[in-house]
Amino acid sequence: MPQGPLFLLAIETSCDETAAAVLEGPRTPVRGVPRIRSSVVASQIGLHQRFGGVVPEIASRAHVTQFLPVVDEALRLAEVRLEELGAIAVATHPGLVGSLVVGLTVAKTLAMSLDIPLVAVDHLEGHLYACQLAYPDREVYPCVGLVVSGGHSSLYHCRGPLDCEPLGGTIDDAAGEAFDKVAAILGLGYPGGPEIERVARSGNPTAVKLPRSFLHDDRLAFSFSGLKTAVLYALGGINSRKPPSTETLDPAFVADLAASFQEAVVDVLVAKTRQAIEMTGLTKLGIGGGVAANTRFRERIKALAAKLGVELFIPPLSLCTDNAAMAGIAFEKLAIGDVAELDVDVQAGLVRPGRP
Ligand code: KG4
Ligand code: ZN
Image 1 (tube, rainbow, N blue to C red):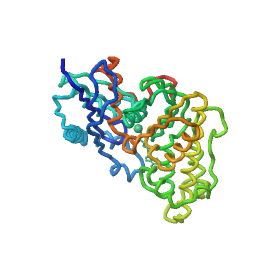
Image 2: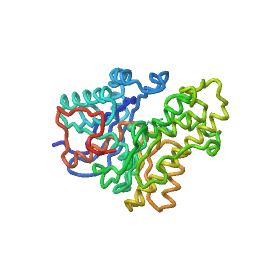
Image 3: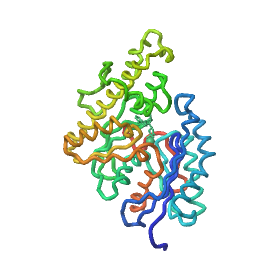
Image 4: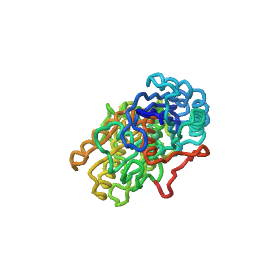
């Protein structure tokens, strides 16, 4: 039986980031927050930019070519040799099937050839666990969890890292998806979130009146597609059924519209999070996902937490957007013996029925 810490190689290929990380944590059955030894993310943004969004087939192919150098780099930076690894973790759901399959295939191959356990993790639980990685000396759970990413806008009652009960989610676009689509309408680059944030800095957030769905509704639901359409209307795209040419747009108006859009998204995210906190009576709040990198959102959610007196856990930007370190939640699974068989498969959607 090997002694000392366990080195785990974590793999993430659910969308368009090829990522690997090495974490150092306790051996079974001891529970403890692992330490990130290295975290490498090879972005594919350059490949998808001209399409204004992620093209699944391109993403899968890029994972294949990028993967091994990324794993090598993660091991090199961690100063850990392949033979020293004690387990492999991989995000198996939710995500793009073709992309997930690449990561899972590498993970299975390594686990089998090194004869070490394979742990399948949930990408969304991983996004929230990033909070625990960011604050290793504080207990994040139980908490209200908010995941705001390109594919999800969901609120959870998290009793523990592996026990997150869905409270509500989006009925159409995810928050990040709305950022990406509105950026495309405004002729800005991809991914849209950082672009909107950049342009919004010089805009007036109250300049354009935009809708805020479900704001005064008891349901913990989000809807962003009407907001996206409202942006199109504000640009005069309503009659032509397609966005007006972005070359003719006044940059000052684009800035106002971007700022107004950002404020509308943030208003809704903050209001619904407040509702979830009040409904559950929980005193901790954990945030995950790419949209949590947004500066305005961070300011407002911090203000909310301070006002309600709840403890806020919001990871640094590198742990908000997709990364492999968050698959370090695998240590929680190892501690309870939840190891995957080698016939484990990927799932495009959410694994638990009824989950938002
Ligand atoms: O969590 P993530 O990296 O991947 C998914 O699991 O989807 O999230 C990506 C999303 C994209 O839609 C991107 O536009 C958004 O996060 N995003 C942002 C910012 N940075 C990334 N949205 C708003 N403001 C940002 N600064
Ligand atoms: Zn994600």
